[in-house]
Length: 413
Image (tube, rainbow, N blue to C red):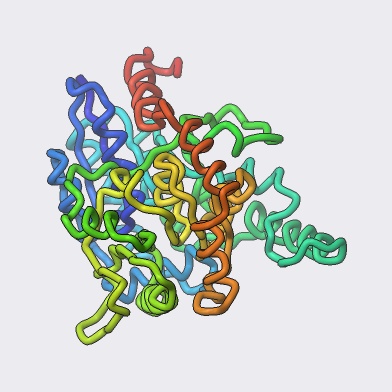
């Protein structure tokens, strides 16, 4: 038996649920411990039956919003102060030693990239392919410049080259990580890519998402990992599914905001559809949505197949993969480069339409929703993608990778 320490960002829903799925797939003989700094989705960890260690210093709501803005490229202001990074690394190192952890599994808890290395413990990172080192190095068009003409393509290639240099070479990592890494005898983390590359990087994607790419030795594909919440759908979903109007699922994960949630709900309110919308965590008292939009708490979205006719999603990998696995065509409005990439991969397969979040409420958004409801070719593509997903189990593949590391003689993995 060995101890595996999971370090998700616990205010990120997709990341927390991804870690839970991996932990469930491990041999129960192993000891699983979760740690985190914020309480948002910790109940999901506890409900799954895992030991959870609440840690500090945690972030305020404003700090979290700054972190999300920094992650989405909307701000260069980072909430990672030297004091916070140093305290978290010291705490994580103590916890690794106290638990005698054999492996650390991170989501995007960036201090894990220092603490695990400082303790000499292998660091595993189940991660989407977008914005990883090989994806940035080998992608010629990120889609920064919209348009399909030759001039737009040229401008996008230039923008992509500039982004590649910034991501891989510019010393843009918050200075706190360079300073604290040195203090812990770890190579300094100066670039964005150095902050997001572990010892073992496990790509949570389907095979076609890697077409044309070559992976370095520290990267491998494991397959999709998405939430399967142990809960029943609320009765309202069944009632709406039986109505004559189409049923749309509005899923915005944990990286959207109140403004987008209200805008999307109000736009969908103009269509002759019903909407089930687990967006309650974004709304404030007094916020009103149209009567055909039914706000709920978190839903076990993997149970929506056959009940929902289409979805409107923020583009996070978990929500996209859940729609793919259940055969639900969707409109995706990625909020940052990784999410836009996720949507683009589905759009290429034919089961999704990409729309800018800035266009929610405009005619092109409503036209896209109508198309995913009515276009037979999109629905056929969604059925084909669902069949391709059948049997794919990234959580089990990730668990096997971790267990091989545990079983390997020291120094041979």
